[in-house]
Image (cartoon, rainbow, N blue to C red; front, side):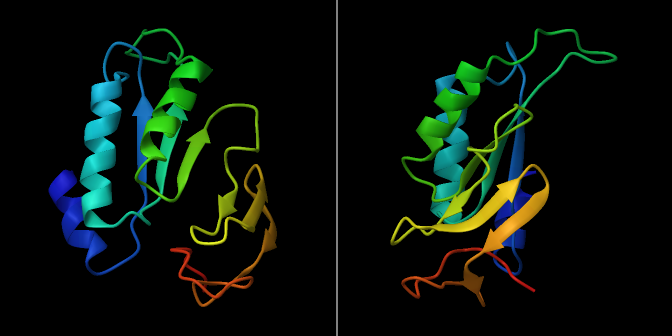
Length: 134
């Protein structure tokens, strides 16, 4: 999978989702390795940490929100767009400009409320955001 991300990122927009499962991939070391890998390719690659819920064949406990916040904190040291999913909060799904820090994409769940990006550039400062618009 990592080779595919590296190859694809050279030619197209790539986003990575990491389903965080307690006891399998929820250590700081694993979060740091993934972050370092993506940052070496491009710090604008969006990384989503998703909360795991027990289902079908895996019965590990549900991912604690504090684990997702810790993962995001680690990733934000090197990546510009880090999100948390599968939790009842919209505050972790907003996109800010990596240069000026202003909110450029506002969402409520899966609904786009506001977009302040034109051709990938921040409408406030003109910097590259890494946001793909069509």
